[in-house]
Image (cartoon, rainbow, N blue to C red; front, side):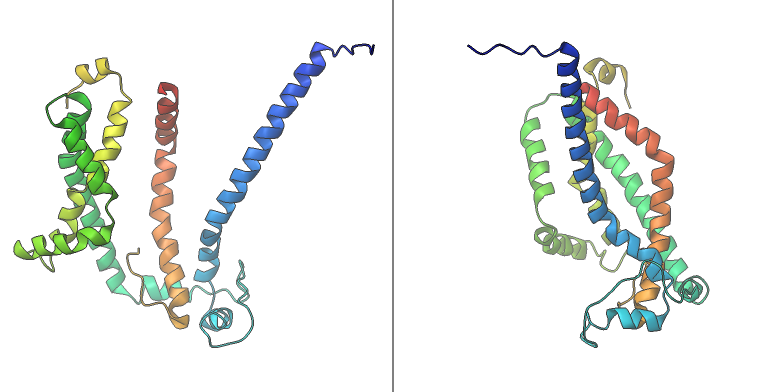
Length: 250
């Protein structure tokens, strides 16, 4: 009969820790690779905003059928220029008009969603009433419908209300959207019932993209990303705390 080999406890523990680390490294590597693949288009934007028209034409010619070979993108332009930013910020006053129009419409949509979606989500989360499940299921169904399905009915309603070619035609459908209600409802359901009872309440300026307009479009994309990054930097701690709270609750 063969003799048994006794493995020290420290060796078993070390092997277990190594397996956990290997799994964590593997999962982290896969997540990093996927994140890099998803974020790779963002790396093209700064370089594209600084490329001159000749370099942009040379890169996109094979794609647009005006040249042979393959397109090769440069993260760092060979001949960088600030001309696209000058044209956008100095020579295009319409950009500022469209920017502030969009900012105003976004603010109106946000205020409207808070006025309409917040009480609705609160009612679904805090109260039990007849037909509650049916109504919430209807919300979910409407949220899952493709945009194209609702396009024609929304157009007919807005046309009957004489809101065609009016900012309200964009604001009102977003205010009464079901998605904000669903998101806020999920947040309210993570709060304890005791707390609920105690509390009471630059696609902005993208032209038609051609070879001559590509650098200009990249410059617009850079300026469009800046506000989003700024807001994320300001609210990162609150976002992480909210995610951590939901994870603890689950």
